[in-house]
Length: 415
Ligand code: SAJ
Image (cartoon, rainbow, N blue to C red):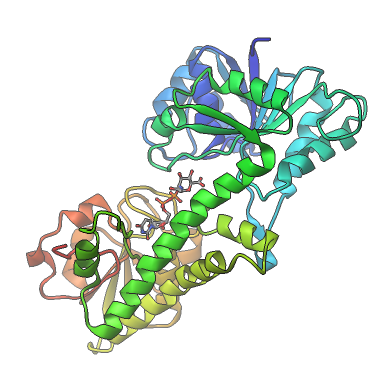
């Protein structure tokens, strides 16, 4: 059976690019979202998030009549759920968005449909999704829900794209296809083959869920190693950037970069899903999270010590985004550090963030001014490098040699 119409539920950083790419392959796509503003923006051929080239792909898909956004679910051949899975108090996964998505699409589901969960999810979430759908649609048969042969297929196919390279990685990355049954896998692979050039690798849903969490935990643990080294090196008066460059000369060593902490809505969140599922056993994974979460506090201590050298400290926080060359401020350690410095009255705080036009609400009505890079260089006596944005990389030693610099990214390091 072919896919004539696909419904993408959740038009955010993953859902919208996925919807647009599928539409660009000539399939009719209906995107569902709970935000009227997002729906209206997309239907005008515009985008409400920043991602390279996404505006062009969305505009083309909408103009061709292949992509449409709506707040009302309608029947389709396949449903792809790409809603957030944040955590609640106590670092427990919050599956309420998935449950709401299930409730929204259940009334329009038909025999032969395929339902795919793309959201990063704790182990067992896809089975839960099938159970919710079964509850809302007792007339249909979902995998693992009773003895009858399933007539709706359900799979978990975790998204793995890197913000900033989403359109490219959506097509080129291999995909893990975790079906609740082998037939679910086959059906999901048929869909992904329409737009994925990478390999589509079948497995079961639980392994697919764990694979995605494992990928992000692997990165978190490795960043924690780099962050821990940076603190040890401060204690031992060793340049961590030189140390890492030297150690990485070994053919089997590849240490990542220390930073001000780990941000974003994935790596700083997903490892907790493993810890929540296996609290006694997930020891390195938990410790890595704790090390990375502690790094902003450590940086703040360094900035306070630097500011103490001045009667009237003017501190330029360079970068607010969670990583270089994006506008995404979610779970950003840079933003957190800037806010905490302002709250602690360490001095006048200047924020430099070339990718935004106004301060986020959290930073408004504090002693923080959003300024240009030249103004920050003119006014600040302390520079705190929090993000390695391109314009910052272009600075020379002449620009900074009269300042006290706290460089969390190694921007001014020779190594
Ligand atoms: N970071 C460091 N040092 C490094 C690398 C990263 O401090 O050497 C920091 C970044 O500054 C940032 C955070 O880690 O604050 C995360 O950035 P990232 O570029 O490592 O990853 P994300 O969060 O943008 O995207 C990740 C990716 N996962 C992996 O690389 C394993 C992406 O492929 C996933 O699709 C995405 O999470 C997701 O949606 O889960």
